[in-house]
Image (tube, rainbow, N blue to C red):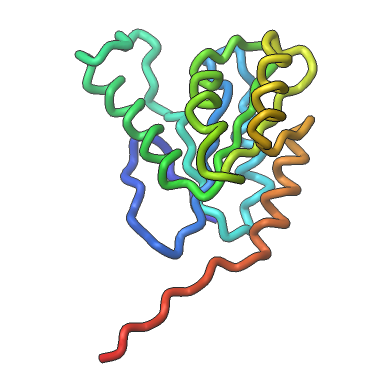
Length: 166
């Protein structure tokens, strides 16, 4: 397993198996659920795209005029586009408006790309449940279910590219 954290470059690699960790961050409110997934997948073939950056500064103005903020949002959008799987976790201790936005962006795209975990207690669980049901998004009840799915999924090798004849 490899991990790439924002804002580091996501290499172009046709054989890489990228999984993007979308979901609650809200510094100070959300548990560090990403650490649990990274730990459990340490022996896997996945390359984890983790938007939780070590140098995040909550004083950054969240506008298109702030280069650091634009860099973060652009990295996240690119990561989700490049990912083979997008994991979304809605922490019940958060509001997670950006995760709700991302669910709206991806629910009806890329069949089978999303794995959503929205535990009981999340303030908009009903909305998430209905969107997932309508668009046949894989939905689970616990982080352990996400990990199980990713471990099973990794056992299906990605087809190798044919070598070009010289």
